Length: 114
Image 1: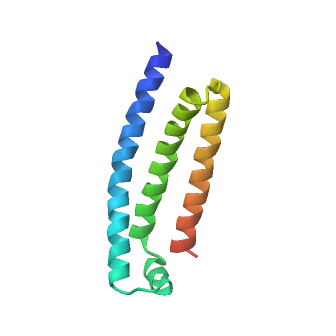
Image 2: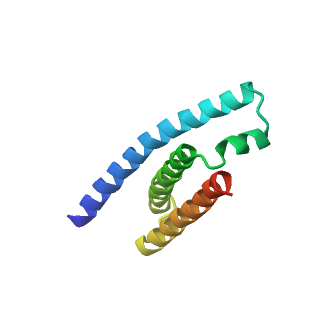
């Protein structure tokens, strides 16, 4: 029964994170279009984002949603397509989640605070 509950929870969290990601991607694309049409250079974009709490929070949520969503899908692929065993799946998905989290938050820090 606990394996079934775990699968239900994973399904729920992947769908919730997908909704957050869909919103974040749309906002991110809108910002890219705004910057490109406005003719902003990379230096001008960094000047606008430096110290921006809103920008930092938005992209932190984006990173957290990615770090939640992607490893769940990766685990499903490793289980169903590659027939990995559960301990290896958990390790690979956990390490990938950690990698996404560290690299993503480091990027947010670099753009907003450094």
